[in-house]
Image 1 (cartoon, rainbow, N blue to C red):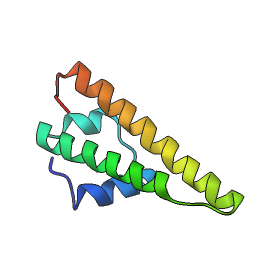
Image 2 (image 1 turned 90 degrees about the vertical axis):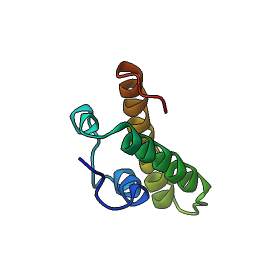
Image 3 (image 1 turned 180 degrees about the horizontal axis):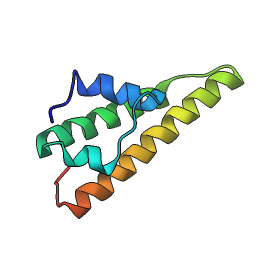
Length: 87
């Protein structure tokens, strides 16, 4: 299963909660697609961390995005370890 669209856009959708990544979804990706998605997640994580917030609502949104990204990155790292994918 190929990644639909750009990996960065998918990573942004994941951070906003529009898409969930699970191990069954990851099984359908090739190692190259897996690495692309992982790298895009790291880039989006860096971009979200760079956002300066001024209100409590913006801070909550930023933290929720970071939590979602951290969860997906952890799932992907454990999956890569299990299936011996070098990332």
